[in-house]
Amino acid sequence: MENVVGARSRLLESVPSPAGEVAAKILAACPTVDVVASEPYFHSSFPAGALMIVERGFVVLRMAPPRMNRSIITCDAGPGRLVLPPASEEALFALVDSQLTVISPNALDALLALPGAAKTMLEQLAVTLGQKQEATGNFGSTWHIDRVRRKLLQLARNYGRVARDGVRIDFPLSHTLLADMVGSSRETVTRSLDELQRVGFVARRGHTYRLLVSPDFVALATQP
Image (cartoon, rainbow, N blue to C red; front, side, top):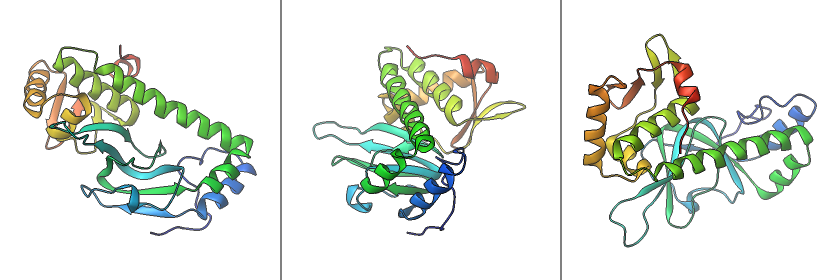
């Protein structure tokens, strides 16, 4: 763990002073956890906290319920996003080396007493909830290729980087990870991605993807 006193967290970097400076001091006193890519981190891996901020990198929460033959992704989050600590049946994985700030209950109370910080945190919680609802709604499609297409659009909209040749999703997405995100088998996701590449929707390089659509199309795409 490490922390840099006075550093402005990604979550609250837009909060104007003086509230922003006070919030920065509150978060500077909170522990940070460096998360190594692909290693599982459980509830006991983190200090007691009410919420966690992704400062850099990209993380997912994976649940493997008993009596299920595969795991499911319950949450994904990039820089500046809020996540809950892993529940008892969940493990947190980073797709790339990442860093999290763990907000203690006392620190959360102090942040919520600052109007600017409280507004930003409420907005980010709404974003996190919206993403989870969108991901859950995606399970309603019986066509697995639609699930994969919609998940790629969601990831591109929330975390993609606009380039001349499309919208890039730069963090690694394996077929197994995508399968856990959309509730399909890895084999089904592989076939769906092959078809999406054949029709010119997406291009793949290693474990990263480029959506061959306009940024406006990504921004306007909606989920059922």
